[in-house]
Each structure stands twice: as C-alpha cells, then as structure tokens.
Image 1 (cartoon, protein in one colour):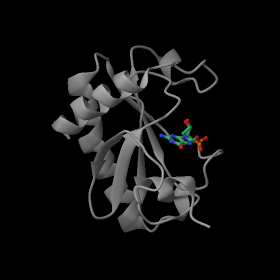
Image 2: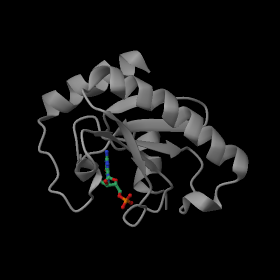
Image 3: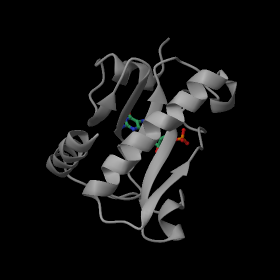
Length: 130
Ligand code: 5GP
C-alpha cells in the first residue's frame, strides 16, 4: 500500500504544494511548527532516509536547498533549520523550518493553527520563488 506521502505526490490526497521535479516533491507540513514549515520528499518510496542511495540522498538535499531559499524570501526568519525525524510517516522526508530561535524546531512544541486560506496563500507565495 502506498504511503500517505506517495498518495500526496499522486494527487490522491490534497496538499499545499511548493515544488516538484522528476525525483522530488515539497509541500507544507499540515501541522507546522512555524509558518512555512515544509516537507521535502523523494518520489521514490523509501522509509528510512539513510537507506536512500547516495545519488538520491544528495539530490534531495540540493532540492531542499532550492526550497529553503524560496521559503526565506517569503517568511521572516534568521535561517531555515532542517530536521529529520521520520517516526510518524514511513516515507523519507526532510523538515525545513523557518527559525527565529532554536526553540522553533522543538517538535514537542504545540503546532500552529493556520487557516486553509493562509496555508494556500503561503504555499503559492513560496512556490512562486522556488
Ligand atoms: P515525522 O515522520 O517526521 O515524525 O513526522 C511526519 C510529519 O508529516 C509531521 O510533521 C506531520 O505533521 C506531517 N504530516 C503527516 N501527515 C501529513 C499529511 O497528510 N499532509 C501533510 N502536509 N503533512 C503531513
């Protein structure tokens, strides 16, 4: 059975899409730690990020860089933090989280409640820069 992220890539499940190429996909995290919190995933369905082959893993980081620079243009922050957790969804992903301080990337923090309209506008704004 495909992962929830593969179902997002295929369009079966909606998302706030940021960017896509042949091998990678980026979209807003539905439960963001900060405005602009984005997930970057490989289209290849692999659970653990360190099981990806070197080429896919390094390409994912280059793709994430492009997305992070786009987020920075749209969301006031000191920089974009990256994290890999992977305990919830068994499809490798990198979290990109706009940071004002180290506390912003604490995954035990309460998640932001943004409206559909806010998420949609944010995704469109970031996508236009990616
Ligand atoms: P992790 O696997 O890194 O522990 O957490 C998975 C992340 O994916 C969480 O931050 C969660 O909010 C996000 N997530 C889980 N399901 C969905 C979904 O259906 N759509 C989106 N956009 N994000 C999701």
